Length: 95
Length: 95
Image (cartoon, rainbow over all chains, first blue to last red; front, side, top):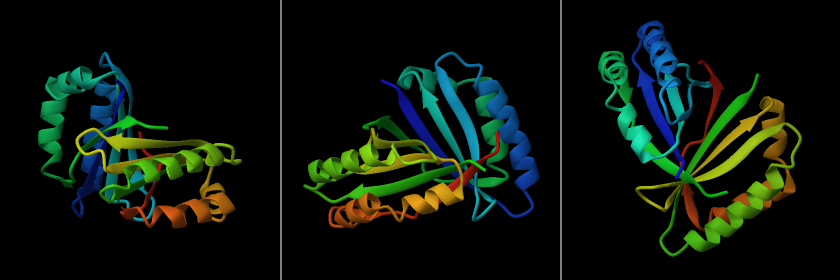
């Protein structure tokens, strides 16, 4: 079952350039992972400090492996210094 | 500028079948609209009453026209009887 993930965050004041640098590295590494259909970062047009990853994975196993990769563990731990993470939701497509 | 929209909602107890029926009609009509790149409904795998539309539009104008179409106005007004809408966010892609 293909899994869609929406991972939203709010970047702290003055942290946007650094957060974007970390996200760019995360996207670059993640799209190379097996089972990653897409992994894109979006910025809220009404509030540039609101960022959202929209991801698509082959299945839950691929997603689970992703969260254990060195680049994910390292970059996400650095990101926590620059942003507040909102609950991550995992979805399956209906229509 | 391509616009990505995430529109989340929480369906009320016993309203899921009806909400899904209305969303199916909304998706069917909306994907035919000019400027609509994609318009998909997703269901939270951890809570089936959490639904999310992930949409992609050619630009803000196409999105604006969408919200004025008869099918959108009609179906969304019916949906409000069956769900609670969360804030809709509009995004542009970064990476």
